[in-house]
Image 1 (tube, one colour):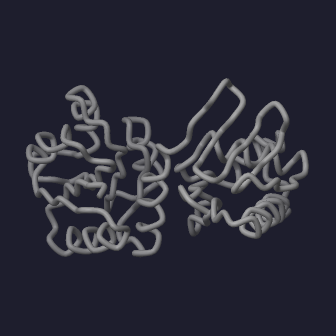
Image 2 (spheres, rainbow, N blue to C red):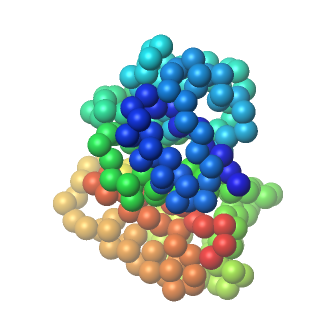
Length: 227
């Protein structure tokens, strides 16, 4: 079973996160101080859930030290410092995701699931992006789920490719407009939602729940290992 390290000094928050971790079939390990988090981070953890305002300092400032010490787990910062500038700072300092407090349990669960699946992508011969049962062939510009072909339009292929290259991360509608439609402004239409919805239905019909909604932020591409 995968282990998830929780570095959190608030007992209620730590218990809530641990409950979601167990709900995903993983083992939670809780520590309450930054020093304990640094010491434990080099162990075999798939994900590290890291608070910011900890006894001993700011968790975000410790990310580089964790990486330098050999921590390999993906890092989700969970903090009451939830302004856009705080999130940008956390991501720029090495966090893999950033979720403000208070959080909805289902969103935390989705974020954790996305990080757990993020490491499953394989790139073979600069052609195949494989996420368990979901495969994307770059040269042929085709998509398969459980080896069955999923018919996608050229724009849908560009969309799923962008999602795949940012697997496990929240992708905003503006990022999609800029990188898939080459629009550097919001045209005031629902073009993104329409295309994402159509692509998601095609994947779900084929057996893959790869595209998830991050409420109020955008989307997360987190295909399951088995459809």
